[in-house]
Image 1 (cartoon, rainbow, N blue to C red):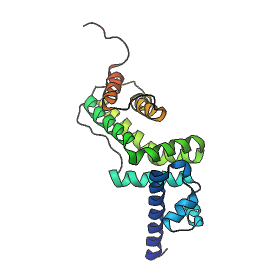
Image 2: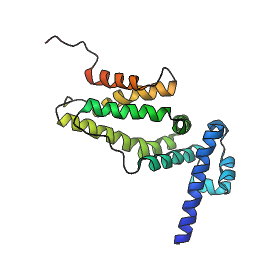
Image 3: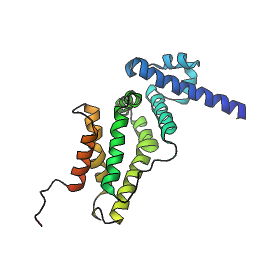
Length: 199
């Protein structure tokens, strides 16, 4: 592939992903089609199908493009030595992202497609969810080494306990997703559910 060909291909790819993302905001996921994305991007449908097997796969890459532009580099969590403070910062940021109109449509579209498409679910686990979970495990592992968490806890279960409630409330719209709720999740996850013993 020549440099000019590679540049044209990357330009077309970004035009397609930008078109998909813009259409999500304008008309909603249900009305977005490969035909509509192609028309907006100024490419043929076959160009899209050559690179992506489905609408869901296009939306996933559009979401990744947005995430990369916003974050840059591999995911990491703050590690100030204060686990509760760090988790509070991260969960509050997660709440803000979930409530951000730029992210909500693509995230809900992805959640729908992932539930129906095993191949897309595998790609999501490998390219986005996997690296994010490892960053979360690494922060909890650091807390274990500092004596802030029990040595024998399952880090995967701990990640689910801390971040799962936010996703569940957001996905099901079962209650307000606020900074206060994020703070309660951190407190409950770290303090546990058992009554405290008297000193």
